[in-house]
Length: 370
Ligand code: NDP
Image (cartoon, rainbow, N blue to C red; front, side, top):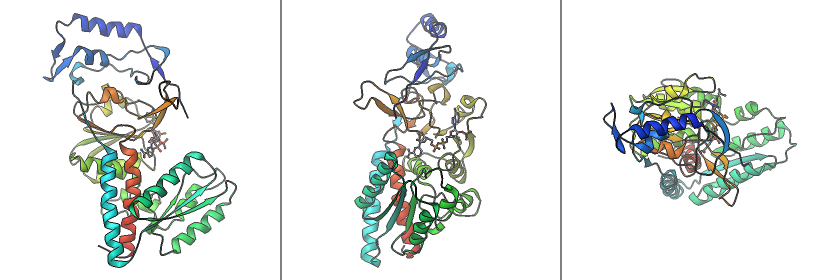
């Protein structure tokens, strides 16, 4: 669904910023941090404050942050792009090789069962994509499509069948479920050994406990950490901020970072001064669902930014009339961060790659295949 984005714009603050830039004698300046700053980057970080509801074009970020950034936070860099698409492809290739080795050695092919209830187009697309991804690596996929008015009992019956089916190693219930169903009951009924989505409370509980190992970690946060690993980003001892605390992304992402010995803060909708907290972080994972919320002046120079958000914003230049952006204002953040995931092409492709990886791990564990 296309969304309209409005930009906060203040002639007074923008004029002040322009005036500051005009007062400065050359086009590049060195501040307390010893970093060279351009006039352009300085202007960028004097965020305009008073709203005059201006509709954005495709290229600008959403409303400006009300906080004023100090000059020491402004660095003119160009972040390395963390290419989730190519890493996901690499992982899928590795999975394909492993599945073929398993088939040749023990004659087992991993199987993933997907249950879709109702006729939401977006859910049908996700399920289709998952099925295609399974086929591409050699995983057998099984699909059950139930009508919107199915009962909870019917869904539970199918889950129970898949729980007992030895050819199925992973079970996924496509969310959201129709409102008359109890999501918790349904997710709890997936046996923990086949919970490839990692949504079962036992898996999340084990993730939260020291000395316990979850059988599965939910795919999106696992994908975020995998990106950090594959790009050689050190996590141990670093400060990390996760923005968002949902059960499926924010909370498990924070738990994973903590397990890797980061010092983690979680920012949510009731957090006061989220910018200040985020600015402390060496690693930022943003999973909010608010287009371009994290501005350049929220980011510590050199931080690594993983943007989970997928938001549609109006874009007259696009044939679809909209385009997808993250929770982080990319064009600002890429000048400050040392590395950043794009949207699309960052975390998104990793989510499906991790689902395939979890399904393979499940089959290996069940068949004791090393
Ligand atoms: P949820 O809506 O479940 O959670 C959003 C979280 O963000 C909540 O914890 C909420 O806080 C917090 N939040 C909302 N507004 C603010 C705010 N203004 N300031 C600080 N925190 C805020 O979303 P999800 O976790 O499911 O998804 C987050 C984003 O990630 C979405 O854009 C979604 O589309 C995307 N996504 C992408 C995936 C991928 O594969 N790339 C997979 C899954 C999700 P509170 O708890 O206080 O309400």
